[in-house]
Amino acid sequence: MAKAMQKYRVCVIEDDPDVALYMKTVLEKRADAVVLAITNPAIALHSIADFEPDMVITDIEMPGISGLDLLKELRVSYPGMPVVVMTAHVSIEYAVSALRAQADEFLTKPVSSADLVSIVTRLASKGRLTKTAQEPQVVLAVGAHPDDVEIGVGGILAAHRAAGNRVVILTLSRGARGGDADDRQDESLAAAELLGARLFMEDLEDTQISAADPTVGIIERIVAEVRPDIVYTHSAHERHQDHRAVHAATLVATRSVRTVCCYQSPSATIDFRPTRFVPIDGFTEAKLALIRCFQSQTEVRAYLEPDFVLATARYWSRFGGGTSCEPLEVIKDTADISVPASSVPASDRLKGERP
Image 1 (cartoon, rainbow, N blue to C red):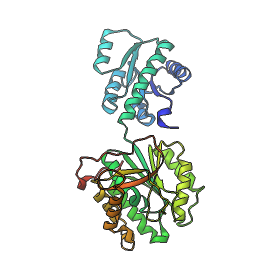
Image 2 (cartoon, helix red, strand yellow):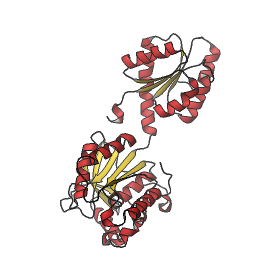
Image 3 (cartoon, helix red, strand yellow):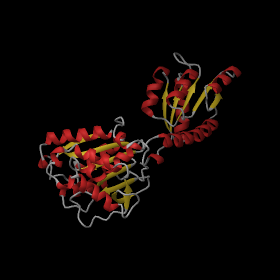
């Protein structure tokens, strides 16, 4: 399910188990929310980090940590997340303290079910929008062999990282037919480190990758774990059988992903028909640096020579903006893949922290 269609997530922190159960039941049945009820405030912050709610409702008077102290902690860690504080004791002092701690609402118990649903619906919607705006996009690049994604979308991935997006690379084989598998794995790790990307390295048999399971299952597992907004993968228009298989498997495994695009590889056929041309001006050196990580291949593959890589990007710019582009066949597109160039100097663009 796409992120935008998920039910609102609400965390209720209430040390009275009966009250916590009442609020959880009301919100799940009448607000169609996913509710985490916490009766031990000592574990609240850790539980919130794991649950990733759209909003929090907390009692004030609790053992160990007060709701106002908890609110102050939440404002530091989650500045945009709506927080409602509640108490059974009507007090101006409590209300002033809550407002000073930047609570979004101050409620007195007992809270009617209608008021509870109304407040949660309004504030959870606000929290979801804020969280979505603050969250970086997650980009997943899927390749059959080491260096596939760096050749196809190395510039785009560098631009994503410079824009603050999280980049994940899934390589489905260690490329044993094209060189020493251990060497190629080390090269992949070095490229991911340079890019600041998270790398998943599988060990399917080179030249024998299937378009069905286990390939589909592997990609589905990674998609479920990282929840990408954008996926880049091989084109169907390929001479290499592994590339075609990965393309087919990826389309099955990314049914819930908003944007899926296919990149060009050196083995693409003349039927490769890109419909999007993403400028990578300012990121060509970053792409070349990624490709240089694959020394076992750059020494024997003419298409990895820098002038060839730059000439290819220059050619595709005739259809797009700028002076260098990477071409994409867009399968489906509801996310923004026009990544803006960063003001970060080109020499620093690959120094971001690993997400």
